[in-house]
Amino acid sequence: MATADTLARQSSARQDLLATAESILDPLVDFLMRGGLGANAVKQALIKCYVRSASQLLSDKGMSPTTSRVALLSELTRAEVASAFESREFEDHADPMLVHDLATILNVWHTDDQFCIPFGAMPRELDIVGRPGRPCFADLVRVASPKRSSSEMLQRLVASGVVQIIEEKTVRALSRAFKPREYDSAAVAYIGQQVSGLLRTFRRNSNASVLKVSKFTEKSVKTDHPIEVRREPEVSGFVSERAMELLRSVDDWFVKHADADCSVTSSTAHYTVSVFLSRSEDGSLQSVQGT
Image (tube, rainbow, N blue to C red; front, side):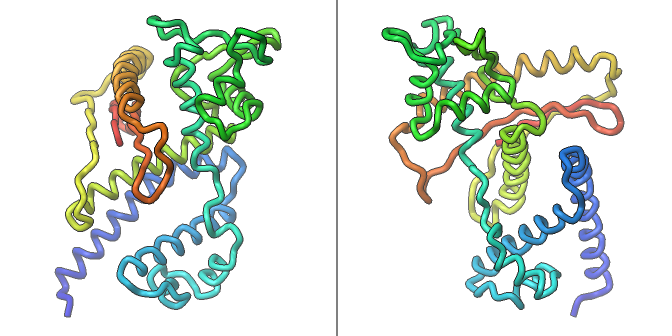
């Protein structure tokens, strides 16, 4: 039987977890609200997430994820669980490779001698429509992401603000890194990928001993004393410059060691390294690096 002290500790841990959940959800809800999603739509998505997680947890324990078991574990009603199971949208139909493929196109554009100026790693302006003896954007897509439509990829890259069309004839890369605009469909996928990746790293590291896996990199630095907000551009510029140095070296390593002929299977995975600069409520600044 649980003692009063044990119950008190469990209650405290639960409150701490709820407080953490609220701090994570607060900026997320603001993002969703500005994108036009209300509480009811998010509630339905949250229910499906709980049902998926509870089903996986039961399966990991060798138990069949029945409606009753999932409802009990997730604190949902049987009707809510049954509805989630029956929903056509229960499985994630989002394109998980979209952001990866867009980023790959930009990377090849900056590193492949067909599409960039050698040694300087400066991307060439590419023709939209191919001409004899000159590489065009369609050629780039065929090399970097052959299963994708070049017109769709160009549309998404332009909409995301990382590629510019010049006089309706050529296209120019404005960035090696894929950083889409807010609420563009690719931007939403990008944000989801970044946030979920960071949370998966925290989850993996906090359960590394139980899962019997190694911890991923989880490093952060924070100012010892507050910095005046007026200096934020200075701080942001410095972090951005150093972050790009790190990411370029990591990206070069990934390109060198990745197997281009390797297909996506249960024994393969994609890896991401991200660097974030954030400002906490007390005005101090911190950068976070997660893998």
